[in-house]
Length: 589
Image 1 (cartoon, rainbow, N blue to C red):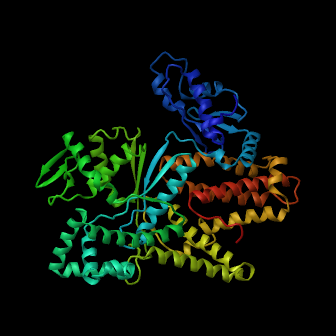
Image 2: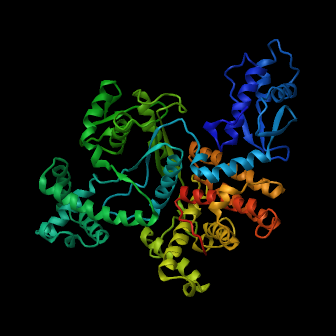
Image 3: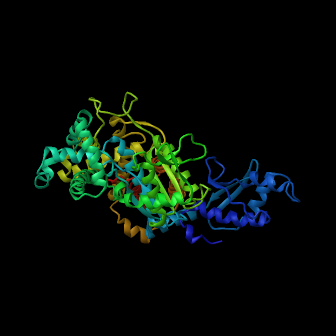
């Protein structure tokens, strides 16, 4: 049986195809059984098919030739079509079919990837269009460390889906339509009657402006009343109020864009104000379905399993998060035609998402089966903690500004490079670029390597350490591979065309197998929305390379060409991993 061109570079999926054929031959009456194939952790083989155990209860009551799971396993192995990818098979324990891949087949796949490009190893997902809703800061407030996780987790999920040939709509659902705008606009009018001609200089530092207006709002009841009326006038569309609102949004947006540029993150803004005009018709649709009821002066949706209802119109007639989020979901399903909508926010908002997803199911917008499409997923994440185990703050108990945090990461990274004398070797521009890549990469990786649902402690010394599971260690590993290739004096592009990969040493084979598991790792990380799966793969790839390099001489050996190609394949996969994690690789360190 020839390799499956659709799943080229995805060994697990190609084995699934082989075992599908075997299952249909072994148990033709059980047509709904899917092959259970996973990478092996034991020493018996590379992959394992685990269907025998779960098949046995289904067939033992029927007339069957088999006498237990081991016999089913033996039959699955016997009926496996012959294939160039399989070197050997064996059955262990209660019918586990262990498969050892052909080292020549692994080598051939690596060589093909080097010629055709890493994109040929992209996983094939069944969906075409996804919305990833992430970052979403509030206008007029500065981005702080709390926005870090949503921004980088969301960006990585978007990158992995894009690599998997899915169209991703990256959405920044900014808070640009709240009650705080009445307070800000009235304060602007009071302090700067000629605010239109004064322009941006009237507001100056938006953070200080926000704090001063909030203080006045809390202390001055007359001002508070004016601010509340200003919200109504803004939402009613009065031109003067709309102009002031637009100016405040623009100043904020420029600050956000500066941070996004530094992080290498791209987003399209569709904030709360974008969905506002659609809210009345969406609520009308929900009311028409009998979902919206009056309760204590508010309009609500009652949901089974929740004591309190989902409020969609407040007592004062105003809209809230639920009305905006339901409307945004309706828009994404019906106008943007997304099959999967992913929301990246902290775990503290889990109940809100559970409730409005349930309301969408009641409305018939989403299927009851969570695995069917269209579907929604809340990607919750834990807190960023300080050394004291509490929420990460500055010494003066202020939240940490994201721009300050990035400044410090770059400065610390640069100081280490200068200490190592790199300022004497490199140009100022190179020093700056590499300090930035390492500093920002360290911050991102320290976050992404953790399971996102857990809290993690922010520690610059740990994340900038060049030993252990850190971005610095991995960037060094990549730079070292580039150096090995450079020092060989060989033209690697020429070697790709004329040379060939051989995996005769056990450490060459282990590295080759790990490289080949890249596609299935990205697929798993996408399916489960867990970036840490990719981080773990990248770290293990680096460890596999170190073992190979320690035990297999590269430059000057009889196998130099093959081993240089293996070095290049490792560097190519590492660079793609870095790209998916939003980290800029460095070629010298």
